[in-house]
Image (cartoon, rainbow, N blue to C red; front, side, top):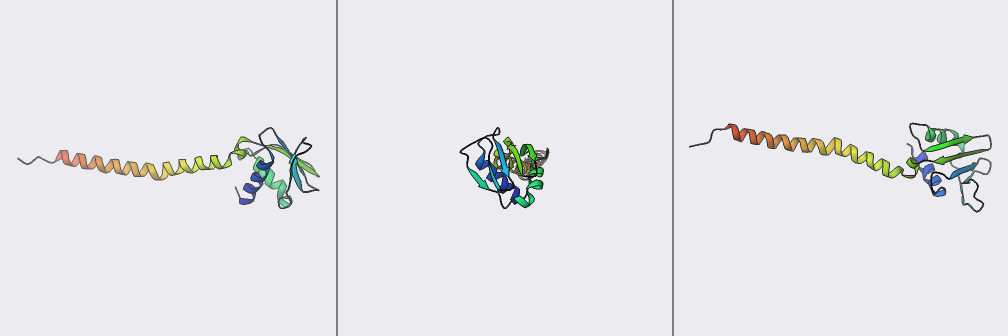
Length: 130
């Protein structure tokens, strides 16, 4: 995920409180707000407008799964955020922990156990002095 996509998700998460909230984007006013919320806060999305179509489409792709119910028209766009979008940092941290465990900790533990086993077998195979 590129930096702009992460920033877009962060901005959208600041609007929506749960995955049932629908975010409405007015492409002419260049604002995003919650759908059917009369006193809802709106944020400017001016920096995303030039690439909003590809940005939202990429985030909604099934392999990414950050947006659901994506609808585009000439003047507006609407979608909901998924669990994955709200908890992006936790999911990434879990992946990093898994990688570190598999790639760094496991080889170290195997190396230590192999060394200890070798030392034990070597000491058992040597005759004891009388």
